[in-house]
Length: 178
Picture 1 (cartoon, rainbow, N blue to C red):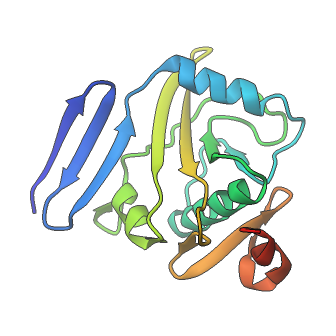
Picture 2 (picture 1 turned 120 degrees about the vertical axis):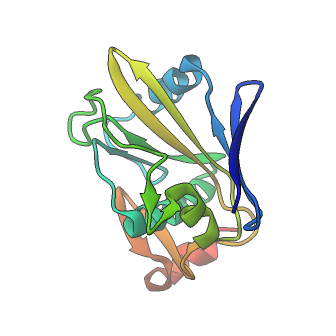
């Protein structure tokens, strides 16, 4: 296997030959992250389409969250869902994070693992920035389009700020693409 990185404009492109996986990771701009945070901080609580954590990382559960956030964003008419590290999920204060979006899971870059287990394939981007002298990582997740997003063959949805299996919520699944 050959792996290499290249920078095009403000994007860092990760190629892994033979698996035919291309991931685009935005090197991108502090204003984008600040704009996202400003939008989300308008809400007093987490919503179906975004989640805050500090340093949390559970690889399988994160994949389930990506499915849930993608489907929930579509349900409420948002273009993207967000998973954000470095924000306290109770106070919504910027606390910073040590989360590493480039870490491996089972000898594979986690982003490859995530991409390989999502169906249909959706776009997702990681943005990392320093804000108020604290590191923030934003995972921007494309909303589901035409069919629900699944992870490891299972579809998830958010009910309030909780993740749930879509098979236990058939009315929400039916409403997804009305």
